[in-house]
Amino acid sequence: MHPLDRDLQVAYFKLEEARSQRIRFQRILHPETMRWAKRGGPPPVTDTKMLRITALADLGFAETFYQSMAVKEIEAKAELEELASQHILWPHFERIKGLSLYLCGAFVAASGDIERCNTVTSFWSGMGLGLNPDGTVPRRIRGKKIGKPMPCLPHVSMIGEQIRMQMIRFTGGNLRRRYDAAREIYDAKFPDRPKMYNFKAALRHVQKLLYACLWAAWREGRGLEAPMPYPFIWLGHSQSSMLTISDFYDKE
Image (cartoon, rainbow, N blue to C red; front, side, top):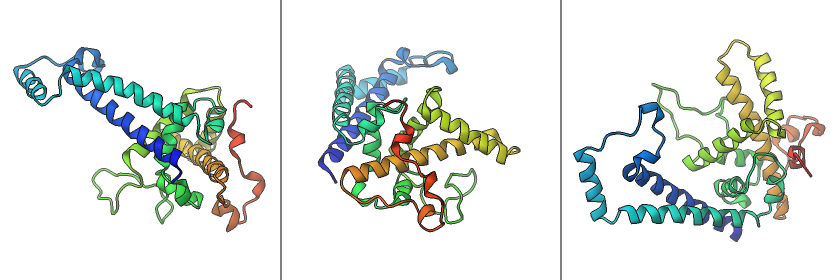
């Protein structure tokens, strides 16, 4: 693994751990600062909660620890963004509306060792965008056992969700326009199924295209081969429909 990619992974995991601990103890020590609108305000302070706070303080998890996690979260995010600004993918991310320095660093951290992903299909699988042997999307179904684990680690799935939400939020961006175009196609093709299915299918479609272009740009930037996806090699699809990462740019 490239040293910068490894450093980004370390910085991301430090950030997520500090954030997780900060939120946990903010909820315990300062519930009034959390969002409790759906529950009618923060929970009451009971004797049990006070005993829990006392026990945590005896273990070193008191106000000082909470404040230190808040500081470490800020420091870790700054470190992640500083490293991301040096990465080979940042010149592409900064030209796409909605993709920030944080998301660049998080994407690299989620991707792992790009040198091991010698096909875009393997990259998609590692990022949770692979398919079952029958061509369906892996998903949990209530009341049904899954024969194998879900296809990616929790933090990889979370980062993918953050990127998908940016596609929706930035209505004037190229990512949003591509989502809208894909959504029209899915709505026309599957008019009778629940709208949520078409919503997720369109997001997944654009996300796979974006990831494929980032994978190719990353591999080529490291001097590695980036072969075309299998539909163009084995199925005879026209190469004129292939995209590059510059096709996602909002500005030069």
